[in-house]
Image (cartoon, rainbow, N blue to C red; front, side, top):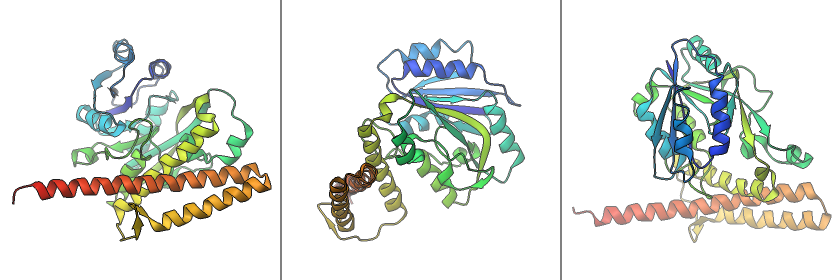
Length: 319
């Protein structure tokens, strides 16, 4: 048996269309169940989900504390079977999705993590600059269409389409609540951080090319401002993951590493050069890199504040 698990928050309209797709899924050998965790929605999300309980093998949970990873950890308490498929509330699976993931896990017993293909489901046709300039994986969480079936790295496994053997969670592994969606501003890369942690512990990952979902790209995410804000969240996540792996004593100023501030200064110069040269592509790429660096600087201050808070708590404890 396998379990599909995802969190949702205030996406009732999209979720209804997604669940209609779930009704068309072909059942894998051993059966399956669906666990949906409502992460504090204010809309009619609960009523919508419950309306599908007669048509899907569905378990509905509520997790009021904000954070996608917090919600996923709550859902892990209700999984069944030997394989857990993770996805998003805006991902539309192909009918054979469960069967393809089941087959991959059964035919590759030495692998623990499985990633699948994610293609865009554009709400409206994207402008040409988006397809050329914006990095597709980071910006829209879609996979490289040239990725081949076989052993892979964590860079090719994304949250809307991944599976992990259940014994990993029985062994105590959980998602980091400090990473992933938690409101408008957050450190991006919740599933990436988790997969990297597993790989560092020796678990192997496999890319299942035929296990496919479509990831909805709403028109609001095709705006320049949204894409550039995405770079900030990406920078925050990359900095946190790097610092959790190693903590070198970088010289800092106001909690921000000086080397990042130096790179920010250089990138601002590139923006001025692009403006003077009237080069829109170079301007976009420079602004993206600047926002990425700002994200790293922001997360450096956040992590510094977290460390200070922990030190204060430990100091106040009786000895």
